[in-house]
Amino acid sequence: MMKSYKFRLEPNKEQRVTLKATLDTCRHLYNNALASRKLQAELYRLPIAKQWTTVEEQIKALPLQKETNEYLPLVHSQVLQDVLRRVNKSFKNFFRHLKNHEKPGYPRFKSYTRYNSFTYPQTGFKIVGKKLKLSHIGNINLNFRL
Image (cartoon, rainbow, N blue to C red):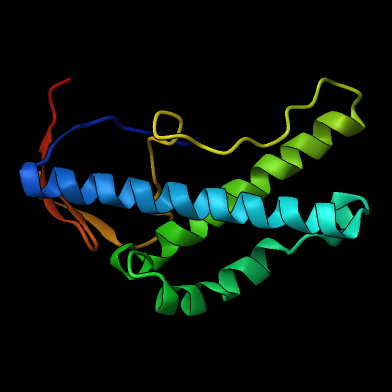
């Protein structure tokens, strides 16, 4: 059984700016990864499922991208890896719908209003007292009353 808890974050102004920048960076990475896979499919004119770059290859390319993109190093590495896994999951869902003869929805590019969360899958976060400590962001006040 898995449990989840919801807490309201109460970031200060500086943390709000950092959180927004993190979301923007993740959204841009998502859209770039999606564009890369879409371009490969158009160039090869072969079934997309057999020709695109794998999520593992995209994750291995992140350190090189961090050298050329000034915003990527400001975000925790596992958060960036999770963004690439989201792209992979959206394509898997697309092909699952095709296989089951359901109406498929090709993965969409995410606008500002359609990308509103990021995930720390394993490390980079900790709850200390009444604060949530996020790597590269800082200690954010938590409101336990919802």
